[in-house]
Amino acid sequence: MKVAPFKVGPDFIDPGYHRLATGEPSSNLDLWLMGRDEVIAALFRYSKGRDIGVIEGVMGLYDGIGLNYSTYEVSRVIKAPIVLVIDCSNLSSTASAIVSGLKDFRNAPVKAVIFNMVGSVGHFNYCKEGLEGVKVLGYIPYSEELKVPSRHLGLVTVEDEKKAESAISAASRLVEQHVDLDSLVDIADQANELNPAPYENAEEATDKELAAVAYDSAFSFYYRDNLELIRSRHQLKFFSPLKNEKVDGADLIYIGGGYPELHLKELEASTQTRSWIKRASEEEKGVLGECGGLMYLSREIVGDRSYDMVGLFDISMKAKEKLVMHYTELEALKPSMLASAGDTLRGHEFHYSKVLSVGNVKFALKAKRGDGIENGFDGALEYNSLGSYSHFYFRTLPHASL
Image 1 (tube, rainbow, N blue to C red):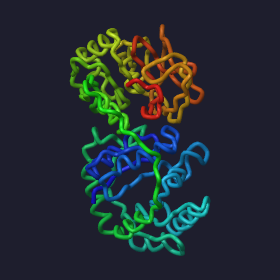
Image 2: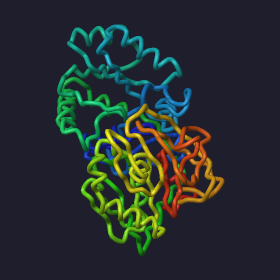
Image 3: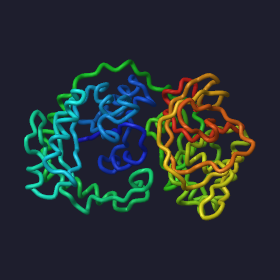
Image 4: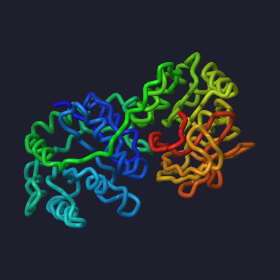
């Protein structure tokens, strides 16, 4: 079957594992960033020509902002049945109580459950004991083969984790042996029909300008739809700062998030890339840096010592601090490539760094919700370049000029 993978919420790492598992790029469904209509439109857009859509939730079933923007809310909006996956490593008979509680709490459309991290057939029998009204599809045995290391932001990215493919192969084998996949497909067929709002594809430009997107182990956090939107308007070419690459003639340079703090020596040594980006900005080309990209565009990143970066923004960053992870809402104070003055932008912050000092920096955005770069201000602005701690979903920004 051709599988369309999706991820609820603001996540860049899990979709990489979806891509390895399915051979297809994964798409996010996030009600805060996208809104109801765009979530439905994205589901249709990226399910076209596929046999089934599999949507991974985020955190627990009801976790979001209060009870809003959760996996449960997404399931309601897209009218999709829910299959729970319950970690039973420290549970037995209580697992069924958890399933029943999740179903009954908001009368959720929980149709089935898969018990995970199960030690034996006897353990599985305890986990499913007394469960009514929810189909048990089977279980996934505990296995060291499935373990993938984590970092502070989640699993190690597929770009850095050599065990990712072997772990997915092992999971595939165990699921085939222990999970009723025919019934899973039957449940998917029970999803209610949707009537999406009319959607117009972006017009293809006849004379496309060139967009350069940083992609390597330091910068890999991109929403699929953001790249697809840029691709519809530009020729898209990837480059690697770690390899000191540049893209001649690029009118737009986009540097997403990732783990620049793990590659500080290489990024400092990428003098050709750094000079090219700064020169492009001074020539009024569009340069956008999100989170890790903001760090790279700053003056320095401090790790075991100070490492020189692009120097576009007079900001000093510390590589490793405390985890910051939440949705953001920002007001545009000045026009930029993402907004007109007065616009409201929704995004999310997702980082493990902090700002040490800010020099002479202009800000385009003010946070109504979120931390931003300094004192609630975000969106460092220089020439036609923008650097933000927030990540954005471009298609729902009404005045973005990417």
